[in-house]
Length: 278
Image (cartoon, rainbow, N blue to C red; front, side, top):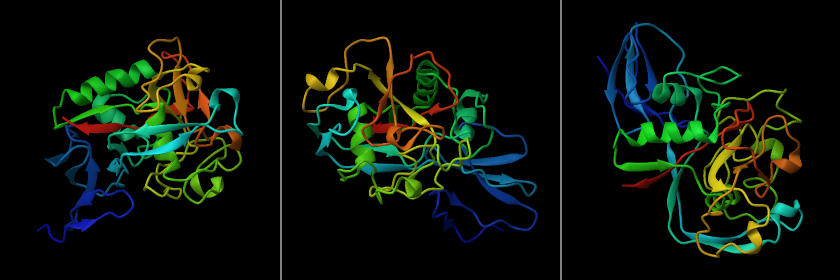
């Protein structure tokens, strides 16, 4: 009855060809959905057989392997917190989410959806850094062979630049790479609808700011270690990166930094996952 496994090229979700009267959708492991028969695969995708035709939510978020390497972090053209540009070595490869975490993923783990702009494919927002820590704790409790966390600022910028040195990764054209104040219509958009950067990552510029693990310090670059900088040991604010749907182009650069409080809930902030083998 079920045949022809095929690859969803946009979202990397493996799906089954539907028989008459059924629709197959990607669903997160660990979430029972009424009316579905869920066959678990590796997180974050399961195959779900639904007994009626429904839209397929873009809830799969495959990870991209980022190699170890080095780059110049910061920018001479940016704000004071982006200076001085300095060499950073990423000594270990890591995997980072191809997309920002979606509302479907958040709801599957946490059981609710705090976002202002509702949509399964949209990035989750109005989640604080502290909320994200609770999400990570719940996700890691599944013990699927990986440890999930937020990226450091250095890892985030390294992945966003993807070997480039200009303001924007990928094509270098922000309108092609991300949703920001000039093209978003004042709202978030489904993840993965703009072009990928050179390392296969979507939405590193715009859509929503992304929480990083680090505490924020405007002066940190003046004394940060060269290899795998972890961020300041303490602080009162957390770093976010990437700009968002309502900000100008200069805030969506690879080097731009923001610094909300860790308990802040804004409809312009979401996040992206990093994972390492356990």
